[in-house]
Image 1 (cartoon, rainbow, N blue to C red):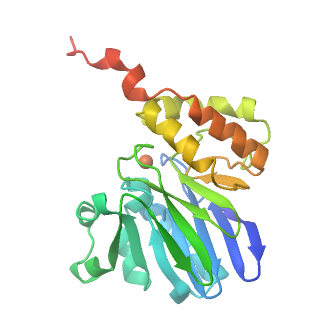
Image 2 (cartoon, protein in one colour):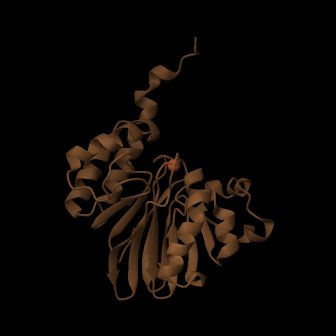
Length: 251
Ligand code: FE
């Protein structure tokens, strides 16, 4: 469990917080982007990572400077602890418009509801301190209302579930071909649409990307590895198309 500063320049920081989960929980990565005196926490995670993560963030910055909580989509490993985060910080929570009325089922206190803010389908540019973030549409990868975050200053893309790997014992990918085995099972089942995969690849090729950080598993730390990953997604078949045979009434 620890922090890894992936970028730091002129008061702008991109910090990977990894290894906070344990037991049966799928391991998650959290990310803190910090600029000047404003912080945004990406995919804050569930109840069991909440307290340790809060401590780790408090060591990096005054917790009242945590202004935003970004939720790529609605899954429990991302959103479950949202009420605690809203209670213990002054941050606004940002999530796709599609999930605004579902997230309160995680137990969001009525007094906190006004701090839940929706992101429109087309995504948006967002000011954090003196720097710009882009909420990039990642719909159907895998959630139908899903966003990624491109940090313009560090050129790092936080890709949410896309790029997730389950089981590698390293934090940084070095050999792409050897790494594919850890991504394959998850992507072939959780990413429904080959069309969405291809559209995404075409879109992110327009960005200048130095690193890709997924919400689970190892990260891609060079432009070459990022290109290999984008090419791989480009050719990835969608689960809904390749699993047509599961639509049978169980015997
Ligand atoms: Fe998910």
